[in-house]
Length: 377
Image 1: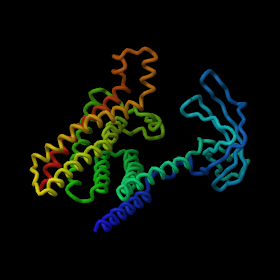
Image 2: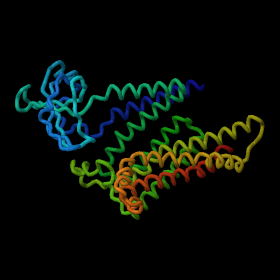
Image 3: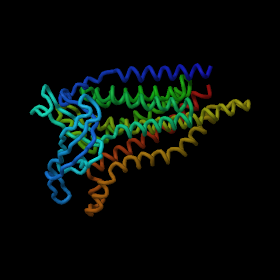
């Protein structure tokens, strides 16, 4: 029976993953890549004579001879250009032996014509990323068996839902907060169903998670307005507007990002509490004891109190790690703490941290009460 259930769940995962992979986003045919070949290349020679160094800033063009390793031009040696714009975060400087990602623009022309150009975009990292992902999946499966395999599928489904559903909805101008809540609700149900199957534990964990996420959404909506935060504080958001999406509501997208970012920790906490209460109830029944709802709720609240301290700190460390360079800059410049806390970027991170942590804090007792009520029936 257990084997049949696991097989059914894994078959459903494969089906959902396959459907999501085939689902078009509507943005596959980008104009800048329509007459271009994206490929892997090996740098054989690098000419740095056209680079200009001005202090820390390096600009100009690096000309490289590259051998194409994939695609329709595989095996050909071509001249590629690496344009440097003076940005340490964006610029790359290649050397002989580096494997790079190249984009070959050819249009209707042939090699050597004015329509033909080879741009060196970045280092080639796809093989390393694939190895890392496979190692992670194998570890989960080796350690947790079918549960680990379910975790791998939940990871894949989450990525596909975000990329294939949520991002296109945002680009199409659908209300970011409402669509974010809907998509997170679907992901929460699917992921927790993979953990528990369809039983009372699923009801408890999904209910607790969604109540916490909705509370975090309410706080993000309210305090983004109170703090006068504009969504342009998000990295690359202005570049998105200049790409032809000037009608997007960046502020609402920022609001949605707050509770989406906290949803993973919220689900984790609700699962911990639900599983703990379920084990208490099951253990009592195994000893012939019928535990009351009040006792089950009390047990859940005890677990919730213990878990809340570390979970809220987890969010604080996660969000502060993303802005560590900004905090170092403030300290290096001697900026007063009063000014730091009042800065719009720091205020946005405060909303991220406290709204998400508040959602976690609400999830814990709510899940404990729901689990104690549902699992003792």
